[in-house]
Every structure is written in C-alpha cells, then in structure tokens.
Image (cartoon, rainbow over all chains, first blue to last red; front, side):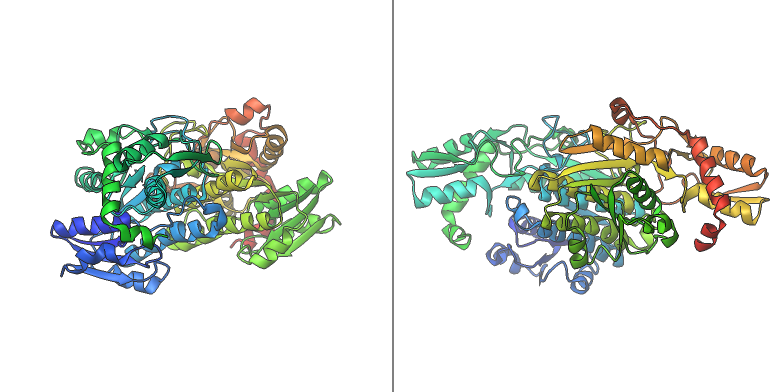
Length: 318
Length: 318
C-alpha cells in the first residue's frame, strides 16, 4: 500500500511513518515543518520506500501532485496549539478546517478515496456524559481547536456521502510517548530538569486527563482500519482510565526522585477553553478486539524516559 | 437597537429587515446580491432607519467598518444552494464557514457580542431520533451544506466561550412564505404555471418535509432572543407536523385547480445528500411559550398566493 501522511514530521505522524515502513508499505510524508522536526524522520529517510515533501498543505498544486497513486491518506497535520487558540483565531480555521478541505479536494482530483483523520476528544466540549461515547449528545464547542476539528469531521463525512469516500475518524485523548513535545508531561519534565525544587502548575492540579501511549494509538488506528469497513467509521481512542494532573506530577517526581514545591495558578481550568475532564468511552473499538498495552502511568514514564534520553528535544522546544 | 443583518436582501433577511424596522429599530443590511433581490428591500429603503451595504462578507475592511456601533447581528447570509453542493464544494466552505468566521472577527474588532445565526435541520444528517431534539446524538453530516453550517455553529460557540459572545443558533426546517424563491413549492408552482398538465417531481414524492411559515419563523427568533438568556441558546424551529412532497403537490394543485400528470424521477431521495426526512422536535422553544400561527398547509398556500401576486419573481429566477 502507498500511504500519504500529512504532518509526517510531527509526534504522531513520524511514529506512524516508521510503523508503516516497518510493515513494508510505501509512505509519502508531507510536512511544512512549522512544528514538525527533521530528526523525527531520520530513520524514515534511510528507507527507499519513504518520500518527503516539505511543503504547505495550503499549496494546492504541490498537494494535488503529491496525492498521485496514493492508496490511503492519514491526515494528521494540524495546528495543535490548543491553548492559545484565542490569540490567533484564524490559525485553527486555516490549518485545521481549510487544510482538511484541501486534502479532500486533492484526493478527489486523484480518485483517492480512503482517509483516516486525527480528531480529538475536545470535540465533545464539556461533555454531559462521562465517559463520553461517540454518539454522545450533540456537543457545544468550547475551543477554536475543537470547533475546527468538528468542521473537518463534517467535511470528511460529507465527502463520504457526496463522493463515495471511506473515512476513519479517530477522536483521541492526549497521546504521549516517544517524540512527545508538548502538554503537561513535557512541560513538567522540562521545569523539573531546570529546577527540581519548584514546579508551576497551570490550573489546580485536579484537572482529570486521559492519555494514550503512542504505540497503542498507532495499533488502534491500524486495527480499526483493518476490522471496520463502514463508509464512515468513528472511534474514540483512549484507555479505560484517567488520572489527575497531580497524579502525573507524582509519577514524574517519583521517577526523577525530586520533591518540588508546587505552585498552582490560573483557577480551576488551565486556560479559557481548556476542558477540565476528557474521558472517552472507548467500548466501540474495545468491542472490535483492540486494547491498549500500556496504562496511563506506564505511558507517562515511557515519555519521561524518552525525554531523558533525548535532551536535544527539550532545547529545540525552548 | 441597531441591528446588522447579513443576507438582508434574501428571503428571510428582507422579511426580518421589514419586521425590525416596523418595531422601531435601526437596521444595517449587508448583502452581495449574489442571490439577494433588490425589490425585496423596496419598502426598507424608504425608511430613514435603514442603511444598505452592497458588498461581500469576504471583504474584511468593509465588513469591519459596517459593524461599528451595532448592538446585535443576525447572520443569515449563506450559500443556500444545498442541492448542488457537490458541484462546487468550495462554495459552502467559503460562503458559510469562512464568512461566519469573518462576521465573528468583525464583531470582535468592534466589541459587538450578540449574534443570531440561521442554521439548519440538515445539520442532524440522517437523524436517528425523529422528531429530532437539539441534544440529539452527535450527528454524521450528509451534505456539504450541513457540514458548513455545523462548522459555523462550532465557531460561534467557541467565540462565546473564548470571547464572551452570546449566541442564538436557530436550526430551521425549510421556511416558506412571502418572497420564497426556491425549493419544492416554488418549483412546482413555476412548472404548473408553464404547463398545468405536467409536473416533474424529483424523488418519489414520499420524501417527508417540514416547513415553517416565514412570519412564524421571525416571531420565533425574536421571541427566543427575548426570553432565553443563556450564553449559547440553540433552538430548533419548525411546526409540530410534517408533510410529504405529494401532500404539498395536492394542496398546490387543488388551489390552482389543475390535475397534472406527475412524473417521478431520481429514486427515493431527491439528490445525493438530500435528507429524506427532517422533522424537528421543537419542544424547547414551545416550552418558552412560542407556537406557530400557520400550519404547513396554510404556509404553502400563503406562498402560492404570494407567487401568484408577484409573477416577476418567477421570471427573475428563470
């Protein structure tokens, strides 16, 4: 199979690239390197089955050309700067919604009809049912990020109905593991490395969060694509547990053997539009037969160990 | 109050303009006349309280200027060409989603914080619960039109959370009445005027449809805005009944006293992405105290009488 992966130099994209190459597939990586990292593709670049296109998804011509002879698209590229959405509202619209439209149009121009899309549990807003299933009540959006992903999902679904596409929409909890470069765990580790005696925590530390380990996330996607053959296949992806931000702090501190003074700032929520509790009902994919191998705690520790082994990453994200 | 109405020269927009002027308000109408009709604003143009801006909502500068000193925005402008969405996928994205973003940004630049938005029952896709309430299960989009309106709703909701806006989102069934210029009733009347002996019907005639009379629609919106004061107020708007396309054909034929030969084409559905049955649960607004004055049949006949009195409209939409 020949796959095109948008955002192939990102956290999830680069891991997926390596995975698909290891399974013997051809991969065309597409990334504008606005947040992607060249080192993540070091391994892939050694493969004769990997092609990298360093360009922007807003560039129709290059994108349309790139889609030639592709069998399946993983659309992972996104503005993942959830926190500062209100600082630049245009970015989510352009990078997440408009870019998804461009990907769909480039597919249509090349008769490529299968797409997997990285959506988010944020799409459920402040869910009224927890754990939240895929068929939860019609959600109210609380962030520009969630709104832009909802818009992208809707576009993809309309292309399935209107143009005979087949889609896999994955609503992720936060993913962590090797090459993880943002969010709480990354931030805490970085702070503690600089000053093991002090930790600043945005919010009250009681925000409950769900995490899924990257390799479990990749396995889940490939498993669902293999097993589920509806026109539109929507899956929550997460573990069947959650933790508090304070739990992950404890795991990290225990692992690093540090006892910092913790300073909590910013009230109950981390930021405007931050969701205090995302916990997804993943029984749909569980019922297909998939289950995660790592617990949240194990995923957090795997992440910390990776960051310890790759200090250059902390500096590149200064 | 000073209102800005986007799409003010359209079917709903021009009726709302007249209504708000009659209530003593100031109205700024904004329309690019891509489908708007100058004659619809003939009455409004005589009012000293009406200003018309003939421009496109993609023009940021003019839009931002127009928003100055506005108290409340009715965002009604849209690509309403639901049927041919797949012929030009870009149009729904640009005219419905991006334009809504532009309206929100122009509001933000002028500290205007109240918006009412014309959404659609199409947003529920092929609903699993009928009649469909506002909190129906998370829908799957079946048309580019629905997807673009869903995207716009999400943006508006995110602006409420992120920037302190207050929003009224109205999910309409099909609206008809004075100045109605598309859809089944318009099409049937026009066909029968040209040839009373023959009627072509897209679909099998058994598609069930809900309609609401325009004046009831306007009353409902103003009623909800007056009575409901949440941050985000979402209301289905329709009657508590539905009809089949064949019912409306019968009412029209009886009224015109014609007995055409009917030819059904195109299978069960009218077109790809057409929804065979939209029937909204309107108990939320009913519980506020509003109810429609006209039945679907009365609304259809009101529309036909208007078209009979305004034959120029049929010619302008040749």
